[in-house]
Amino acid sequence: MSATLTFLLNGEEVEAPDAAPTETLLDFLRYRRGLTGTKEGCAEGDCGACTVVVREIAPDGALRRRTANACIQLLPMLHGREVVTVEGLGGDHPVQRAMAEGHGSQCGFCTPGFVMSLWHGYETGAPVDPASVADQIAGNLCRCTGYGPILAAASTARATPAVKADADAALMRLETLRKRLDGALDHRSAAGRFIAPRSADALAVLIERHPEATILAGATDIGLWITKSGFRPETLIWLGDCADLDRIEDSEAGLSFGAAVSHERAMTALGGLAPDLGELWRRFASAQVRAAGTLCGNIANGSPIGDAAPALIVLGAEVTLRKGATRRSLPLEEFFIEYGKQDLAPGEFVESVLVPRPADPMDMRCYKVSKRFDQDITAVLAAIHMRLAGGCVEHARIAFGGMAGTPKRARAAEAALLGRALDEAAIEAAVRALGADFRPMDDHRASAAYRMKVAGNLLRKYLVERGAGDQRVTGRGRASPLAMASS
Image (tube, helix red, strand yellow):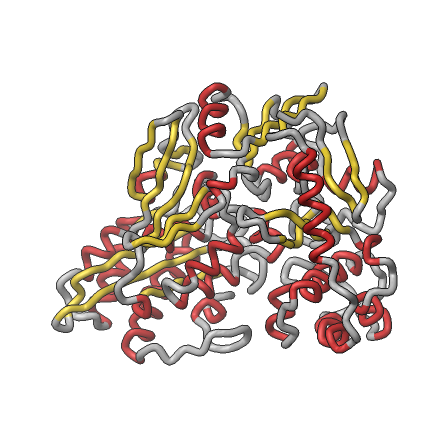
């Protein structure tokens, strides 16, 4: 085991032997290294002012680059990786010049974060059409410039003679560092312990040995416990270095996602199963959060407004739980027991989730209702899949998020549809049956009455779309059902 936390910062090797397990990358950069270009705005991964780029070696040996919110990225999670901050760009990169010369900055507070998101796109060859760039910077907020000049900066920079890419050099630096590091990280300080095993087997042993430990994936949720609630666990066990959990397996049964597979990688694969799944993940958080957070982590935290669960429940997903050498699988819908409670025993963890392929992907719809299009928490999310035979509904699975203490199927509504023609009368019967399925909550996002009204209207919307045929054109600002469902 390696006891010394070591990583690269703008190409320089850095050690932090005294770092607390919960110290954030943002605090390290600003207060220890004086790299104040990385700003603190929200301290919860929403505003993007603290965006940096992380380079790491993927399980297949390739260089992986991702944007990250430094405010919720825990420092030990960077062990064996490289962090690039705005200072590392040198001040004269084409992206920086395009932002400055095109008036993409006014007060300047958010500018370094935008520069890093655009630099990531520049380095990885991301598309520069306005819609693609808008998706790319959805996790960066500006309050004074307006986004037009920022969007333009992406294409202006790409037209500038390219700076020689240093991807090969970065990979060599990381490979050299990895060879020197002595195995898995077991970092201890006066504030606690951070353990990063390298395999699922080692992870299972550690979790069974330390059932009191906090299991960490992308820190997109636990990071907020730390920055907003002062959460300071004695032991953190991180699964991000388990290469065998960072895999997507394609089989006849469907797609299986290991516990370390990020939303970014999962969304690409799931988007191929049904068009609406790809559109749903496009509205999931931001590029920074999707690159850090994991699909299994979104399931394990059991949030009633987690965007992934309703869609996966409708597809009949199964979750595999592991304790030591023992595994058990159960339908995802049975994993959620009640608010804040999942079917997890002490020492047990979510190892993977299996998502079957729908036989008729065009008949599945996902509708996310939120106050903003980008990076917003769901008020109501509906996932609906029906199959007809002889003009009547022979299969109906309907699940909602935001309507109960857990993601939940609308079984009474499903029963009201089975065996009937998919017409207005059947849908109205299903709408009425929602009252037997749910007693929604009132909170600051939406009232119970609003949620019930919206849920019924989404069933009606499904009927309209099925009756009209799939005439949708997906894309920002056009007739995607997810875009239309925003309020």
